[in-house]
Image 1 (tube, one colour):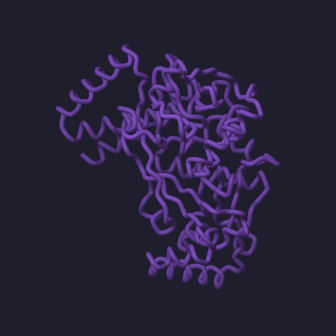
Image 2: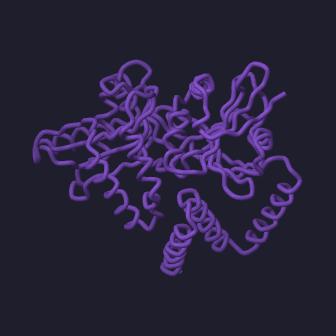
Image 3: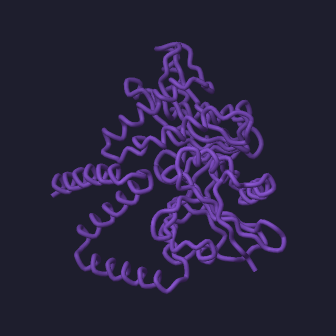
Length: 381
């Protein structure tokens, strides 16, 4: 019989933090995004962080770190940067995700990349991804050899571009940077990329940049922000930043100097990082979902993840689900083009809502998104 208490992260005891960490590691992902120290960093930047602790006779049985929104709605901790999330539980606990939501007093939760042992997963969740990772099983040399055997032409091209870069511009250096100004430069590159591609700028809200810097200056803990830089003759040409812990690096931001695009500096950074994983204390490089076209060259492992809206088993939630199904059925009758437009709008709205905490920020994001989507539809007409 489980009971649940909801706390703020400041009330987390050392014993519960240890049990939480054990559950995160037991998933086999070793993701820093599942670690209590990640939740602690996020909680310093947002005031809507809550921790649901589920207990039984053995102690802490499950934990869910989330952002509480109105109406009992929840998003996983760190949205929209929580590229892997979970309602963590001990391996002997069989209570399902939707039942844990109900115990926590939540009506529903929106997941984008949920790791769950439930089979099948909660109604409303569909497979997404998978999340791709490079896992070092022995040495970095063995990992590169494994990847190269799968994609010999691609890795030959990496080596050619690296030689060309060195010949034409000078010494190439991969390093970990502790310079906040370099992190700000990467953030600037990424925000420019968002503007040029029409994607919502998830780095615009103040809390996101603050979270990046909070993790960046963390010392002595199991999880911190790491900034890997690629320079040629001292010039920054590519960088990746994200949380790192328990041997796993999970890049959030990756960008490069557009003037050096011909050398594929972003790809060269990943290639060199994987080649030197031991040096940086890494056993896993987690790339998340999406962008399968290039991630397949650098990864040898997949993790099944799910996205969608999981609902607690309450009567009112069944009514909402029925209404949502009716809306989807109505949209399906409108034809493929309208259905595709509806799906794009829904996806963009959800992405904006996960990052923006203010009504003004959401409205501005929706206005920009509507203009971009509608102009794209007009061009394709």
